[in-house]
Image (cartoon, rainbow, N blue to C red; front, side, top):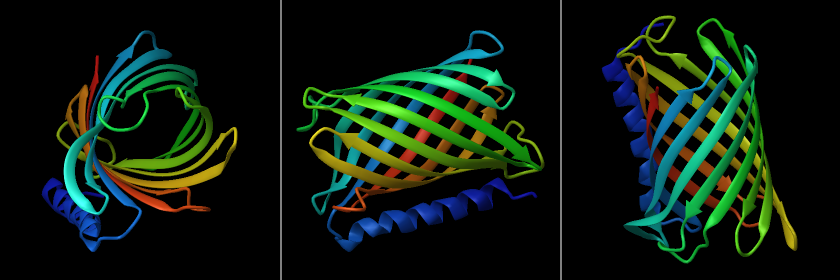
Length: 231
């Protein structure tokens, strides 16, 4: 399969423009964000690695009005251990700075993760299980997450420098806390990326979330971009 980078980009941007146009419909319980990120990957050994990232989430549409204000900044670290060729365990810690930007509270998040990947022809599939503890001054929330993902090069059978690739995700979440009814969320993510150099990738994409859909549905759109650097 060979798809030109130009036509791929045009088609992907069209999809995202259609998503952003939802903002203009004035629907209730809808929020949109812009979220850029930078990530640094470092291999300690052949089986053990670190990942450091910083991401910034900004309001784009909230309370039925267009705006561009900072909501939060996240600093994240993950330690990854490969236990088999296609399986790994990871432990993460995140600190979210939010009190300085809006009425939210700062958050410490601990993450435990199991990841399984396998490949069929040019498509790579992934299953990810996560448990999280979101700790704030108000409460501790436990989250249980399952994500299915796939990625593939858009030119040829393997990804070479300068070529685009596609990543798609589907994720279910369950959040539980004391004196709070369980919350169910679902997320859909589409990303288009380019391998800029052997150690650098750039991605743009969008994620649509249906939050607390069993009780008080809220819809959230995130416009994503990320620069990933490997050392």
